[in-house]
Amino acid sequence: MDLIRQGTGGPSGPDAADLQAAGRGLRLLSYNIQAGVDTRHYREYVTKGWKHLLPNRERLRNLNLIADMIHGYDLVGLQEVDSGSLRSGFVDMTEYLANRSGYPHWYRQVNRNMGVLAQHSNGFLSRIRPTRVSNHRLPPGNGRGAMLLEFGEGPEALVVCSMHLALSRRVRTRQLDFINDLVGERRHLVVMGDLNAGCDSSEVRAFIEKTGLTEPACDQATFPSWRPVRRIDHILVSHALEVRNTRVVDYALSDHLPICVELELPEGIRLAA
Image 1 (tube, rainbow, N blue to C red):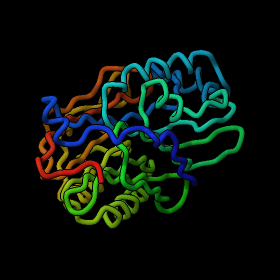
Image 2 (cartoon, one colour):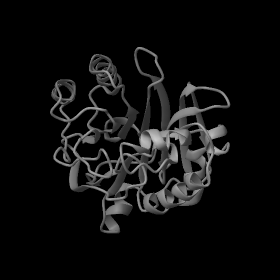
Image 3 (cartoon, one colour):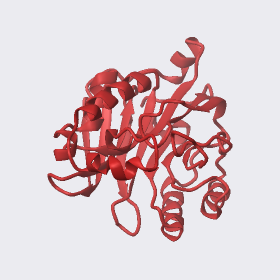
Image 4 (cartoon, rainbow, N blue to C red):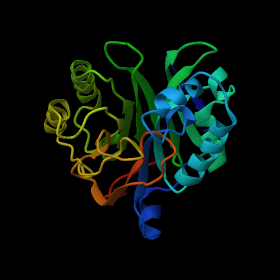
């Protein structure tokens, strides 16, 4: 597992006061992009399964459309990105989307390195320069990870944790316990990503109870994108952060739909050190 940082020489980006002066909140998006594969029916997992192994022209077109959609957000957590292998045409998708959408700060975490065949990764794009970024291997170390980004210093800092959890409920429970220990008692906390479980699942309910986070989009389904019935993509926020609005974006370029929130930040919060 590695964490690559690139393009961090740009401005620090908007602070809470800047957002308030502009009359808007902080916009966050979480999106499982399925390595740029456009899936519109269950049968395409079979008929288009080769696209998960080999390069194709449609993938770059999809990435361009995804870049067009995400450019209006401040912080973007990405799951199922490829970090430059045969199937992606050796394109680092996180870097490509950052450059295409104009994000000065981007980070990617390779969780399952299959060499030239695939580089299964998480990615994160930010218009604001984080104070600290760290990557964490989730138990039991089978190719899942979480990224922790801190904006600002001290108790008023904003902490964002972006992740992609396992398919097994037993393993997800262990992973969420790990995340709970990792984030600790943070006043301004956002936990987001593909949790592979609904907010009514026992493991997510237990995590919300332990952390005291809220689930503002619990009633909004994200999977499958062509007929969403499962609520497995989440953005959880602490009570100190006021949610202006939340929605699932009807943008079916993956087997998941993206989910977003806009947060009203408290006056005392500092995003920059």
